Structure formats: structure tokens, C-alpha cells
Image (tube, rainbow, N blue to C red; front, side, top):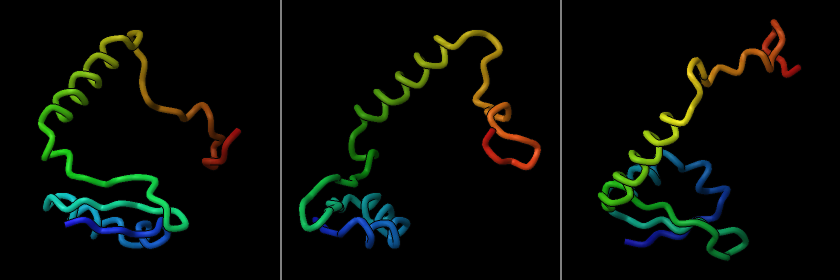
Length: 82
């Protein structure tokens, strides 16, 4: 089933829309009535899962030793951006 929703509604119903996509529904997200994005289940595309897995592994392999995703140096002791 195809479902059309405006961005604001999609934001409010995101969890529900993800569940619908997981059940093979296609959700088209619109801005001012014009389609701008489609939410579909990645499980329905085994090739996409393999592609993402390979891309992630390749990205990790290219990181210098000791690299982390910790960005604490960008924030002060109160958690505010420096």
C-alpha cells in the first residue's frame, strides 16, 4: 500500500510509519503536496543491506588507528558547544 504524508505529520508519526514500511508499505513524504522522499523497508532490498554493510566496513578500515567517534573535545564541561 502507498501512503502519502506531509513532513509535519511524518515527524509526529515516524515510529508508526517505520512499522508500516517494515510491513512492505511505501510511505511518500511530501512538502506542500509535492513528494520529496520515500520511506521503504530496506529488508525488501537484500542488495541494499549488503551494500551498506560493505560500505560501513570499508569506511572503518580507512580510519587511522585510535580514531573514535567521540566528540567531547567540541563541548565544554557543561555539555555546551565550544
